[in-house]
Length: 383
Length: 87
View (cartoon, each protein chain N blue to C red):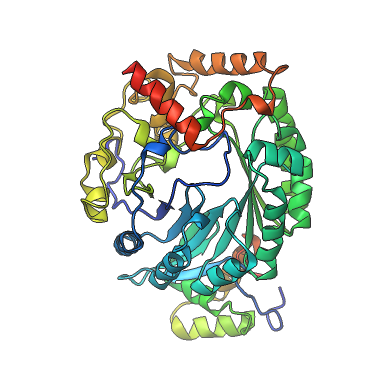
């Protein structure tokens, strides 16, 4: 399967992302959920999820993230955590903190939860609530404190956009005050709802440079106190990210309705025909399904990736981004300046820069069922 | 590190986990995991805040009597501390 002298090794889905619901009390306009999420109605049952966890663990999965939507919306979350913990997973709850209270945190801990990861939209109430589209800031802070009070490691996830990037210093100060163990400073990635909001969300290069300096300063100063991960915005790179550490290599995502994906954006690929856990075993999905094998190895590559020495490092970048920006999923990620379509990314940066003056939070398209249905409508019209 | 008094312990959020069907241990933590070899797994299992570095060393020496492992064990503990796995 793999070429160019790479040794064929057994691929194991070490990282399992369980998106257990699309329901979410927040409306973040950078959400990576598919814009037509409102069409996906049937959520997997408790027993379905337990079977998924059991089967994936047998294949070697060890890192389990509960995500969504907002995973706390599901009242069987405690039961799912307990089952996954008994199987030996390291379990991270990726949450907005809405739908959680201190009693539930205690129950999660008893069930065997390892870490709680709370999203923050800004270090101040007004801006955070405006970006989230829901009053949530005060509760997030309260739940961050409750997480620490109950002896669980606290991860803060700060998604960066044009509106909050200049407050990174305040955010990291807040993280220190909350005694966070880890802080993820992640530039929004332009999939799902973030893509149609890109002109408004994408920070300028100057903003990004300033924020990188702030992150580096805090990484140096507080290395023994908290770990800071800084995820760079790939639109300002000249080489693509090694997306998912290459296709079908270690990541396995299961969506609320039971579709298995090599990454959470890949549902949008043409003819994806993603396999369902209701029809196939996890083993078949991982090893045999056409979707998971589609971009494994390097045989699928076209020039300039096919002969590029960097293909072993970045695997040609992100298939979904290549498709979303160029309409062809099998060409180089246009973030790469060797791609003949790199101008698309440069134009996007220019276009966003032109919106610098008039960009305001109230112009964003929020992630909610109403806007999702509008997107579906637009899509149907075009077909 | 004081070999007699310091009792290393896995940091909050770090956990050892064995594979289901193989004798393979992993160190798991937020956003990451490390595959451990046999001796590294043994050392980290003893990093429970109950054993001093010297006690860990003598346990390892009993498990690997034919090898001169003192330097490797101390180096590994140093690296584990440097990586933020233990305190």
